[in-house]
Image: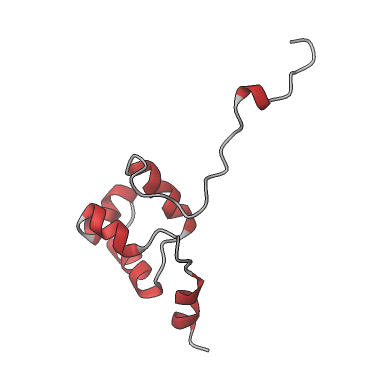
Length: 88
């Protein structure tokens, strides 16, 4: 089994694609700059065919929500969902 083809099959149709990120930022170098990583790291996404989950969340925040992570981030619940502390 070729690892590259196996990795490409992991990407879901509704996931953020490397091409969508490139379309938004213009260059791999700009994507790397926004994320504080090196361009070869971004190049790997194109080779593998998907954007790593953690980077998807960073890109969603960096793009102001224009790009959307495949799964919603595990955000803290609203204050009304928090159990009250004893003595409050």
